[in-house]
Image (cartoon, rainbow, N blue to C red; front, side):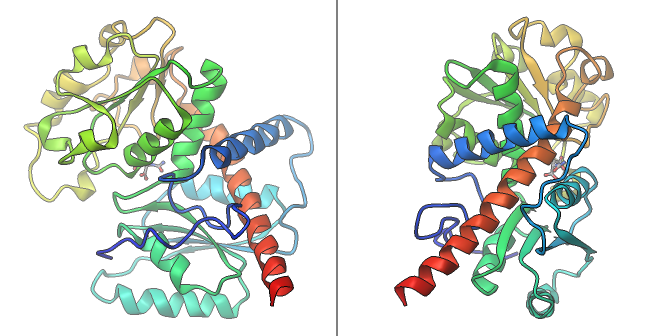
Amino acid sequence: MIESIDHNSSQLNSQGQLKHFLTTQDLPVEILHEILDTANSFLDMSAQQVKKVPLLRGKTVVNLFFEPSTRTSSTFELAAKRLSADVLNLNISSSSTTKGETLKDTLMTLEAMHADMFVVRHFDSGAAHFIANQVTPKIAVINAGDGRHAHPTQAMLDMLTIQRCKGGFKGLVVAIVGDILHSRVARSQIHALKTLGVAEIRVIAPKTLLPKNIEAMGVKVFTNFSQGIKDCDVVGMLRLQKERMNSALLPSEAEFFKLYGLSTEKLKLAKPDAIVMHPGPINRGVEIESAVADGPQSTILQQVTNGIAVRMAVMSMAITGQLNEANHQSMVK
Ligand code: NCD
């Protein structure tokens, strides 16, 4: 475990532009809107015959995945390719005891290959910040999920989905349901939703799956599902992250579904036009009924499509931010 997360490692360059994307926490609202606007323009482009733009031509993107992933790694790869970058995919399984050493060695090796961007997924909270602090200043670091800490591109693709389905954020009531305790997605969603100014953020979970002091993040806590989901505009479901549970926090999956699973019946308590999001992978019959996952209110597949556009947006913004910073530094020297 990388114990202390150095929140000072700035994501912004000296002109206030994105140069790494590590967390949605404390990012200015203008940057969040810039990500959404840029992603919206890439979405329009993806609908065209020619899907490629030369924004990252000549750049090398390394996908550095220390934890298994399907949709995140493949959409990052597609995003980089649609920006015309050269892409190297590295799936590294490493033991946590030797990791500290291994990580530094891996980074130095990749730097020697003149990589321009690292997309990092790691099982330790704080790994992306750690890497951003370790690498030479020219390299942009994008967090693709670190431990239970943050998953900022997932949160922003969820924000894009909300914006496109609901027309904006004002006045919305958003519920996040399930394993909040182990979820980097929930944390990053809460930070982004707060900054974008929704009316109310609710979290719905059994006490054992709620982090201590979650109220301090500015959310309303519900342990009763029916009360929590009532009149919501957006329902964000989460998977039970069993790989991060080191003790029995639940009686059984069947019991969990009965109390906290989203069924067609329970969804009727939300607003009639409420959308249902899920970052995937979904566990049918555990946190969500198949009829809901495949139903008309589900945005699960739209989220995947939106993920490519959001990842293209943050990659192109971070490369530009790094380049502008290098030019700025050479001028002031
Ligand atoms: C999420 C993750 O990895 O944090 N999934 C994803 O990025 N597609 C959520 C999860 O694993 O449940």
